[in-house]
Image (cartoon, rainbow, N blue to C red):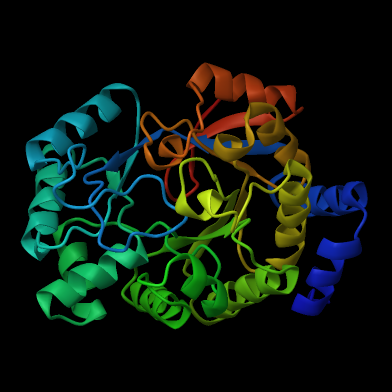
Length: 345
């Protein structure tokens, strides 16, 4: 029988952590055996200029700030080249909402990448960015997605979701895409054959019921489209953010994170993959997530700047990732964007 949102909230509030972990791990084991996958990719943040100015973000800068930047297509290509040379198979290109770039900037970037590196999967641009591109171009979201798809965009990351409850969104990111817009954009992407991931950020002042409301909205859309490849959850990183400075949010515990992860594995009977976050939780807790329902350890991230801007420091390599997975008693495998195994260790 399917777990309801109300039952999920009760488990978040009262469930025994170890019992939840065992139940989630059994679901994972039945679906994936002893294999845990990871990806080699790079996050390329093409600009830190953003008009949204979200209160939970330490990365954005206002246009004209001394440390504001915008990468050229040539600079992006150099980063993709380094990724390919390091064995990477995917790039995740994301940035702030630059006020006046125009859709051709993104189309030219995508075409250039595909021209030089046709084997690289471009898993890029959040729903927030896509909506921004569409509004700037005076196009519908569907038209914008089709143009980006024609230029080389393969799939969408789930960023921009945070908590899909407008009460929370109005408080922490009032200028950002709202719940229905995020869901509608993902629905449209799935309808044109562009799959995506779904994400959630906890620790933004949401209630446990609101966490489950978020999951329920994603599960319902997955019932409709089947377009989500994975669910990825991480915790709000408060360092250098306006929310933390005003005491409006704080970092949640690793135990809370793992409890929510286990409930997600039990709740998402229609989303194949659950990813654990070593980036925000640290390597040791990231390793523990593999016993709480996660079948994927995410990426070794050859580059990432948004979480680092909040003061989180880390270092990862293929060797360390394989050791981390093996240390959890699992078999490590490198995958591609579509979760096909490329190499076993």
